[in-house]
Amino acid sequence: MSTSFRVSESAGRRLVARAAQEGTSSTALLNRLIREGVDQLEHPGILFRGPIHDRRAALAAGPEIWEVVARLLELEGPVEQRITVLSGQSDLQSRKIRTALAYAREYGMEIGARIGRNRQAAEAIQRGEPI
Image (cartoon, rainbow, N blue to C red):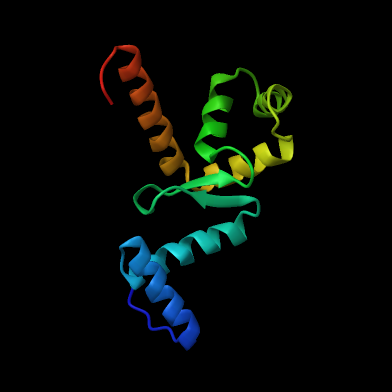
């Protein structure tokens, strides 16, 4: 979808400067900022970490979303029981775990792919293979 936006002169300068600093185009940076910004508005308590080529959703002052989901998948029992167990085993409040799950429900394929890549890397390390 092609859309035209007008931004203030100062915002435009900052966008161009930041894009140059990151080695990307202003359009690519703006797309990322819009996606991440809207996701943060829709999922309060979520922020994004990592380099441009590997951005990951995370809990503010907490682990990445895929890490929370992966740990919950390792536990047994109904979801609420898993949340209680994880909260008891970690510094995560159940409210934050539910925030992570809400984000994961919307972006399940992305989170599942990240979990899969992490498991493959861990298995390769266990076999003594370079990753």
